[in-house]
Image (cartoon, rainbow, N blue to C red; front, top):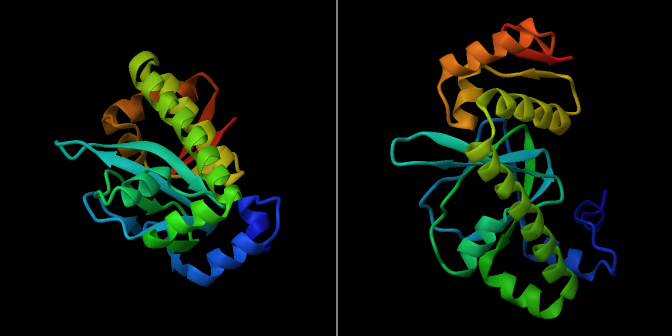
Length: 206
C-alpha cells in the first residue's frame, strides 16, 4: 500500500514523495520504547504498520494511557513539542511489531508551507487526539473503575480486531493508573456477571 493511501491524502502523491525523501523508516518489536519522557524531539513519527501506545508518568512513577497511534497516524504531542524545541512529555511504546516513518523536525515547517494537505492532516490528528484526551479526563473524573476497565477492554479488542486480548492484570493497572488488586477484583466480578472470561494472562470479551 502506498504512503498516501495509508495516511489518507486525497490530492497528488507529491507530499508522499517528499515524506519518503526526507523520512527514515525504522522497525520496532512489541514493547520497544520509541520515545522516552524528557527526551528532545528530533523527528515526528508516522505509523506505517502496527500501533503505538502513548503513556504519561507522574512524580510517583505511576503511568496512565493517553491514547493509541495506529497506522496512518502521528503523535500530535511529539509534533507540538518538536516545533517548540521542547522535551517530550510522554512515553511512546510499540504496542505490537511496528514500522514507523520518522520525519525530521526541521522539515515540518517546509511541509506546512508547501502542502496544505499536510496542514489539514495535522489538524485532523489534533482534533482526534483532543477528543481522546477529553475521554481520558472524563473517565478519570466521572467513571467508576469497573466502567473504565470494561471500556479499556473494548477499545483493546477493537484495536486488535479480536475478542481475546493477551495481557496481565498488572499491565492493565499500569495503563489505567490504578492498583493490580483493584483490577483483579473487578475483572472477577465482571466474569461472575458473564461479561468476560478470564484465563492465564488472557481475557475474552463476551
